[in-house]
Each structure stands twice: as C-alpha cells, then as structure tokens.
View 1 (spheres, rainbow, N blue to C red):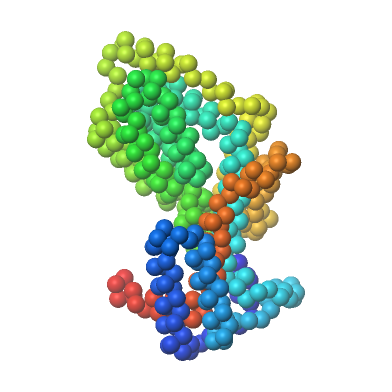
View 2 (view 1 turned 120 degrees about the vertical axis):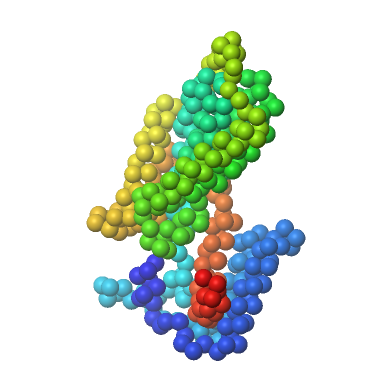
Length: 356
C-alpha cells in the first residue's frame, strides 16, 4: 500500500481552493450524519459510505484535485490502476476477510467448544470460579474470534451450566460481565478488532509489539471487571463440601467431545490455529519473505488452507462473511482518500491542533 501510494503519479493538489475543501467537508459531515441516523433512513452503512465515495470521486474528477496517472513500480514496470485503488488499505481488508474465514472454518472442528467445556469442568461447578474461567475465556476468544462468535459460545455455555447448577438467577450477571469482556478482549491483539487492524497497519505496529503494549491494560481491565461483576451481582463461591460435591457431579456430565465430528480435523484445526498465531506474530519482520507479504497474506493463506477441507461447499463460509462491513471499509478508504486530496484532513488537523 505504501509503495503504491508513493509510486502513484501526482500528489495531492497544492493550493486547493477553499470552496472545494469546504464542499468536501460538508460531504464528510453529511456522511457522518447519515451513519448516525442509519436505522432511521433504513440504509446499510456500506451503502451510505459507498454513495459518499462515488460523489467524492465525481467531485474530485470535475474539480481536478485527484492525482490521475499510472503507478510506477521499483523494477520499472508501469501499472494502470483506477485513481482510487491506491487509496484503499488492502492490508486491512485482507486481514479482516482472511481471519474471518479462517476462524469460521476452524470453529467447525469443535476446538473452541472443547476448550469451553474443559474449563467448565475445571471450575468444578463453583459459580465464582466459573465466572473467572468464563471471563478469561471470553477475553481470549474475543482476541482470536469476532465478538459475536465468542459471546455465542461462552454465553450459551453459561446458560446451560448455570441451569444445571440451579444458579439460573445469576445468568444476567454472567452475560453482562462476558459482554463487557468481549470488548476488553478486542483490545488484546492486532487482529482482535477492526480498529486495531487499521491503527496497527497504518502505524506499522507489529503483532508482538501491539500485544505487549496492550496486554497489561487488558489484564487489569479483565480482573477489575470480574471482581466488580461478582460483587454487584452477588456471585459467591460454594460454602459447604456437600454443595461442592453436588456441583462437581453436575458439571461432570458435560462431554467436551460432543461438538467434534472428526478427531483428525480437530487436531488439524488446533495445529493450524497455533501456526496462524505464530505466522501473524512474525509477519511484521521484513527479514523473511512472509514478512514482506504482510499479515493480510498470512490471513488469506491460512483461510485458503482451511477451506480446502470443505472445498466443495465453501459457499456456506462465504455467505457468513460480513460483506457490509468489508464494503463499508473499502468505500470509507476511497472517500477519505478523496477528502485528503481536497485538503479536508488538513483542515480538520488545524482545527483540533489548539485542543491537543
């Protein structure tokens, strides 16, 4: 992306007329307003931003602020690309797409359900211990899965576990704590959430560096949330040996292998998950070929490898992709690219400079 942006013929137009800048600023404001009223106007966010991107490109072409021209690569080759293509952060798009596909396919192995039930049995049915185990599990799952998937796995297991333990009245507390922790877990790694991906790739922050910086805050926030949740919702440990024995017998009836259809695919999924994290962690090192290709390539590579298992029925995984989110970001990058050429970002920067 950086190479393409540097290589693109032309640069942002110098001395853009102020009326053009204000026109594009108004367009940006209209987009933000429409996004805020998304439910009222009955339009998906990708459509709202897509219309903004189209209008911005048309205005940019007619006002002459877009840097039209070919892209020149370091080896001397010339590529003819639409002017808006270099404005899209393809690293972000490929990471979102690849990691979503990889996690979706890997979850079919039963790996995440296996881990969840194992932790349930390890808690021995004690509500306080169960909250801690589920809380930590929610954070970890949210770091590698999307928030919805993590919440479905942990939330549904919470309902079943508490029902068997006769602690159904504690379910609301568990779900609220787990809901908060999905957001905390989304801060942990570079691929945990879309904002992390955008900030990390734009700022050139590596996976390991991001993790080491974010981990202390996540640990403190996780512990604080669980402690406060247990206190507010009255989630206490079991008091007597008899209660502990009964609870242990109830959670022992769970079978962690229920969701595993093939042990071969289960172990393959586990191995691929470990490799995926290792490759993502080292993708920021330019000293080896994978590092030069970037994290987006790693995500797409592992997605393709996992899809080979379902090579004749990949459509069900493609249909599960959040295409609205993907196109939202594609169009957003295009719109912001046009805004940058019009001097809108510079205007905003000058506006907030006194504040910071």
